[in-house]
Amino acid sequence: MDYADTLRRHRRLSILRMLAGAPGYSANESLIEDVLDKFRVTSTRDQVRTELGWLSDQGFVSVEDIGGLMIATITQNGADVATGKRVHPDIEKPAPPRR
Image (cartoon, rainbow, N blue to C red):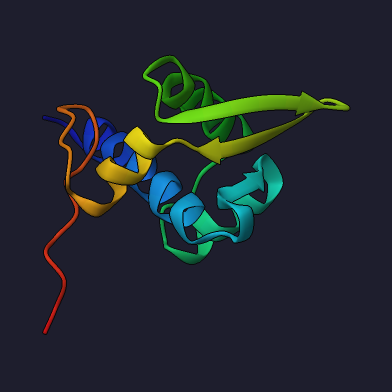
C-alpha cells in the first residue's frame, strides 16, 4: 500500500470520527475540511467531496446538497466503522482506546 492509499484510508476514518462527535452527527464540507487540517490529515475541498461521495456510496454517510454545499450525516453503519465495531478494508481501523 502506498502513501496515497494510506492517507485516503485515514482521511475516511477521520471524517467518520469527526461526524460521530459532531452535534447532530452532521457537518458541512467546509467544516470537515478545517477539522481534517487540524487532525493533520491535510485535504483539499475536492478530496473531501470525493470521500464524502465514496462514504455515501458505501452507506456510511448520507449527503445532502444545500445551495452547492455538501452536508454529511453519519449513518449507524458509519458510526460502527468510526468506533471499530465494524471493519472496512478501505478505511483505516481505529486504534483501541488508550487507558
